[in-house]
Image 1 (cartoon, helix red, strand yellow):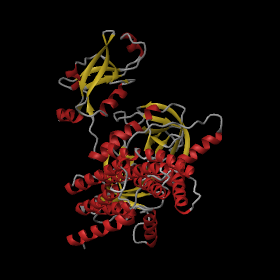
Image 2 (cartoon, one colour):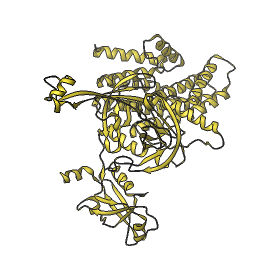
Image 3 (cartoon, one colour):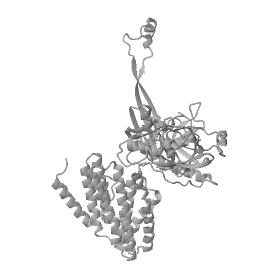
Image 4 (cartoon, rainbow, N blue to C red):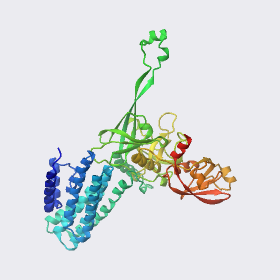
Length: 582
């Protein structure tokens, strides 16, 4: 039963009075923790604001936007009260946090908040701004040698930093956790011990500041889309096999929690093989065929694969062939928790799909690296469920890049080839660098035995990120269209056109009134660059065009009459071509 309007007002006033006295003090943190231990609020709530945030999230899940907005507004009021007790410099960050909460409350009332991830982004940022404010105030308190105030500010900075990390859905790094615990211990000493070391406190404040700035990356992930690419620096592995072993161990420990097992069931109608013989007395006698024989019967097919969690909302990236045609999909986390999943979208041309579960808690998720920067010979790690064996980790190297024609030649392919062992059941699992970034989605193997023979193929992250985000946002992938057919550029053809190497896409034909035609592209042109990116093959150009949003203007550098020429093309929508052909 929902509380009355007067009840809500009374509750709000009570919350404000309590907060004004002690809510952001160190004793309030201990009180909240004690309350959590008694079971009256979730044990994950350590910061008083988080009680409102968790309630807002629950209301949003239950489609009670008004209730969620009310909880967020109450949190904003608490932040507003605290702003009145801070210095002008730090007050700016706290006021910014309050404004973020008020904006979120307004969006919830208007029904424009699309996901829980959007809310969590704000919660992360609010805690980060508060951590920054209290850390700055701690520096000021240290300068004034105001020990009691310094103790309070350090506690609050550490507490809000911890909450910010918790809302990102990622496990707090060990180094960060150590700095948080250390800051709280030093703050406790400052409050209770007369001979507390102020120099130790200053060093701790500096460490907190560095960790607070690191959390900035978390909300950007949600704002730009669940799947984003982050730069990576593979650890040095030359000269010591122990370093390689340690790197693989760290990748396994950090990624396994975000890798899931996917079980699918497909029920399909299968033609009865005895129908042609239903009137044959020989078959009726020896096979005991019934008088009324069904034309079809239902067959239950089961399969398994792997997937990776890509955001805190429960979206999971996997292969299309893992979930295609499934009537029931079950996802099992590394913790053993089991969820029913629904298909968000599939893209057969790239063999990618996204399914979604409704998690009961914030889940860990993977981080994507840039597959374009991967080098042949680079160490990689594959994680998945080969032949039903959970949490299997294998290692190998990148054997080659840009492999095409492995499966359907008409599909969009640009595979990474690896010798990291991949077997049936690995499909949909991640291929990772030694710093834990996903640079591929394990998809296929070339084999005559049915098992791994050293030839594994993964869909590169550059393609998976684009397709995954499109499936999450729209449920389908809209592709760009150029309107030109391409033929392979052989060494002899390249030489006849005056080129020193067979790199580029040779235009064989241009469709009338297509984007290519309007841009002035002609038969016999060789596309050397698509924007600033060099074109290696026709498949390369086709994939780049497909990944471009319709309406985007792109400069094409073409080779024509023994010289380079730059054309500007406005990419069309592939749906236009389908409409023309129907």
